[in-house]
Image (cartoon, helix red, strand yellow):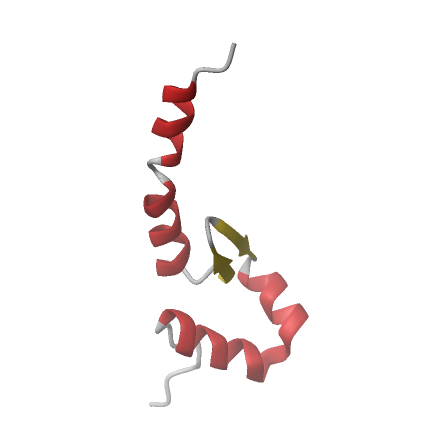
Length: 69
């Protein structure tokens, strides 16, 4: 028999997981309790450098560009 309380307890951690995924730039799409996460390597390969840089900056406020000295 399914332990529905355990399922609810596990789901109660969703926001923690999403906060970490967002903080470290893995979220590519999220809506209604569903998320698509990609490693940075896979994002870069799928999107190309220009789009990857743009999405990291816009979605996650992460600057992945080289700092000029």
